[in-house]
Length: 256
Image 1 (spheres, helix red, strand yellow):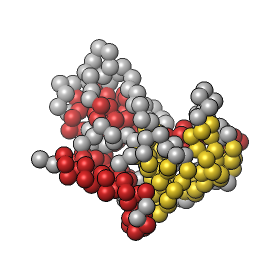
Image 2 (tube, one colour):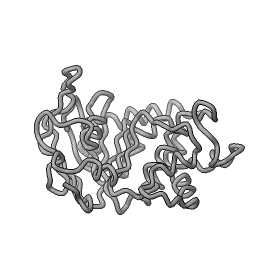
Image 3 (cartoon, helix red, strand yellow):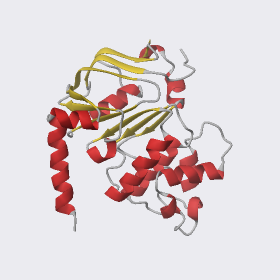
């Protein structure tokens, strides 16, 4: 079944066990994402954050429960059609051995490449200034026989590729982990403006990356322990507050 537009996403008591290892990654996970809503998922390493993204992209099927798009079970939706409406930046970024321009424009659904659209996506991903300092600019080849990008630059090119086609659903899976705090703030502000009319899921272990989301879900050992916005969660003085205080201390220690 094809869908004309993504208006809502629902996880209904979703459980998932990785078939390769038998590890239970999610248990009784339920939440909804409405139209134009940004949702963040945060938690410690191994809490099940990335599993949610992989399930939503159709890489795995829930062991129990259901995932619905516009009220339709995910297994009844044409995955090719769904993924065409989705911009997904996984933890492990992958770039082709090709020009930076072609790596970014790969995210376009049509073949009419607009140079300004590519540049704007790179600017929003805070990688434009890096690109123009390469000898061949956007025509610079990356990969085996070209320039080797840093981890942060790879992540930002991948973000540009995900956002360039203005997909209806954006999933960012801890894609700012190799970016410095100042650049992170710039990207987060740009994405907030750009994704205001889209459903977006931001997965991170850093609160600084997700504190402006409409709804924040804290995962602990595969279960949702808290839900709310940044201020609401701080008032609960629970898992989120504990992580926030810990990261504040770490930030203060690293300041010169």
